[in-house]
Image (cartoon, rainbow, N blue to C red):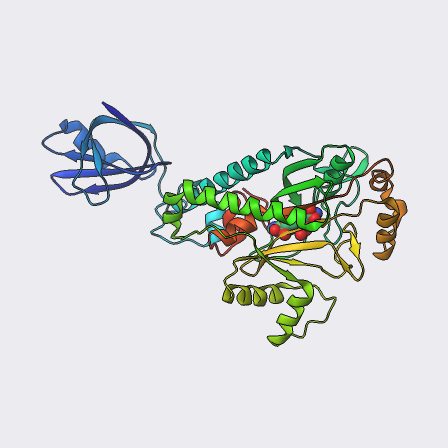
Length: 416
Ligand code: AMO
């Protein structure tokens, strides 16, 4: 005797034979009720079932002639654990198309769709392989505080929170804590971090609450040491997904290939020249905005590069990155025209970080706690922040970053 537990996905009544298609995390399964072979009351009960009822079916598994199912269950008992109300807020079979907003409003039903489960099964596999890679390379997993009293990252706005009688904010990045771990002698750490960013953006690639793989490592020679960890991490993790997630990739219609090592390195100067040769009016020192990134993505794709680094940025990139003449030791990793990662070698000397703050028009007096970590033995170090939702979006050809996080927080959404 076999037992099948799941949701009623579909009911097909062909007169002398009835089929119930049951859906669970393993996929779709067929329950077949030939009128002559099952108890009459069971045959009649099928008519009272509704889509999305949660049921437990007992019966005997037989080989099936059905095109979509290698086996079928011939039931002798069906228990309705919990009946679903009608009409449903959303069609989980996906036959009736719904807008993303309607799907997200009813995310628990949306999550029953095989495509959605495929994305989150791959997300789980991604994290499993990324953790395994970092563990194998000596990185300790840490959790730093999400509650901060001053900005940890330039350039983005903070969400203020009520914290007793003190001003406090949600953390934008574990940046300062990662560096503190280097001053603390942990040498190699990573965190699956949550970033809270009060940015007004309302785009397909921005979230106000995002997750990232953040790493930091000590005793580096330069940013290349960090870049090598990043490209190997990607190579290893994608290989793991290709090995473990063929069914999910097929559900999504994605032909994923493992990107070969090493990844292309493009200097900022080369990127600017390339963009200008394609008609862009970008000036040296400008940020590479969305449009420049997209154009670079096209050019890199034409050269056969899915993932590519952009390094040797002008020194005005971020204050905590080690300056190097008119450049700095920061880098980005882009994939198909979208930035997935920022990182670099950090300043490690007190005098350098103080002058960097001044260079950026920031007041060192407001950074006392941060500056202290550079005064009592700080090794050379570097790291990166690698957006998980952005990575999944590009890897799985999803059109919107909101597809890659269970409960997106954006400019307008704080529920469910
Ligand atoms: P940065 O601000 O570039 O760098 O963030 C790192 C990566 O995190 C992802 N990300 C986002 N994803 C979705 N929505 C957002 N609003 C969002 N903001 C960031 C992106 C981005 O590349 N402290 C540095 C990292 C470091 O140097 O270690 C930092 O936070 O994929």
